[in-house]
Image (cartoon, rainbow, N blue to C red; front, side):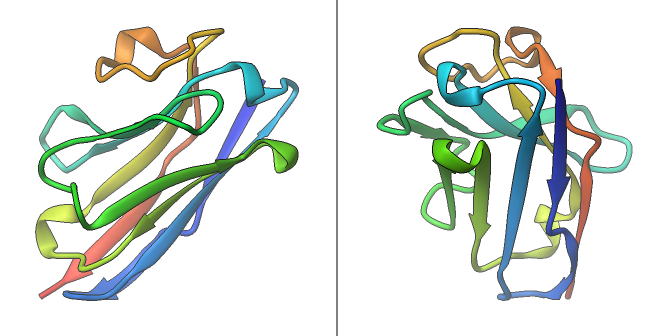
Length: 124
């Protein structure tokens, strides 16, 4: 199973980016998925999660109202729309998939597959 995260880049404060996570080797419609991020010198933190049907989503308080997680199971792809970005959002963003969970979890140990990460840099 491979997860390929993409869409990161450099953006100014207040700008937007859309991350994508494409999967190969496994049909992800049976897996809850999530996005995590890791800033320099910090631990990897939960950002957002989505149930395998897409009907339930969960967000960290720091991104609630600014980020939107979604998925297209027909395309085996998950997305993270990030709006009103600020420098505190600067991090490497990782997508992850569980193995058969219905709903997402906020703890990384519940995820079985990880993408390689995509860097998001927000300038002030």
